[in-house]
Length: 343
Image 1 (spheres, rainbow, N blue to C red):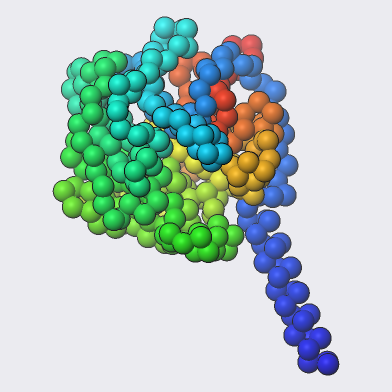
Image 2 (image 1 turned 60 degrees about the vertical axis):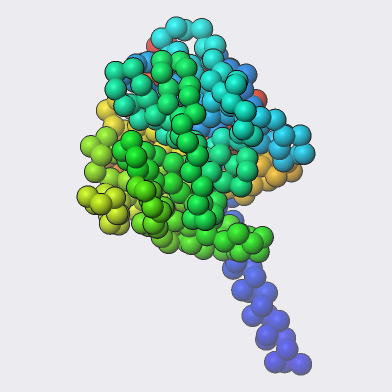
């Protein structure tokens, strides 16, 4: 009996330690205070504007929109890419994929300028398994070029172009089974990766805890990967052949999602300060999830905006333009435009 009680006590202690670790490592005890220094300028109606990217040179934004809540609840709707003229001031986006006939559930996106009048857009698409779609943008007109599909696309989340003919993408999970993914989420297993394509596919970075947003530094020398499960930003040096060499990890103290660069090359990220709250929200069990926007300059991490979810739930992407701050979300009803009070 004594041996049984000792074993039972050990099990209880281990389970308690696991629960405490899960809660603390996912930000459960984090207090989110609503930032009062910003005012809402516009709320652009758009369900699930999960990712966007800005051309500062030409003054426009490309938005990736997918009604994830509808798909979750068995009411799938075609997702779309939108073009938003940032200098017009009317915040009326133009639907770029109105005539795109393939099923389209877009996720992460990448924008690369090819010449004075043409951009390349890469988009992760979850409509028929997992693919990456390539488009070309001529001013505000979109043309589908090709589809990339490969077994290495286990769970693609985001994509970024290195050149016109090469790109990186993240797999946010390493396992495909239900229990494997559960172990990744709750045990914090670091088994997700980054894959590089330049005519063939190869894994160039591994051992990441939920590899999410991805981008390239302004000098094009480093690849940046968001690892929200470990509350970190991972830095890799880009080799001449596209391979990666691990550089360092930066503790950002929140669950960062997509990564955007401003005109100076500083990093802006939408983030989930409580991953368990986000999981509950994403699963339809909670109506709100807290949001945070952070900026990384060099090694300095600055929290610029927090909300308990009453205005912005589950922020996934953010970027400034002039005196405005744009925030996209995973499943909210609108893309929010903020401005600092008194400016």
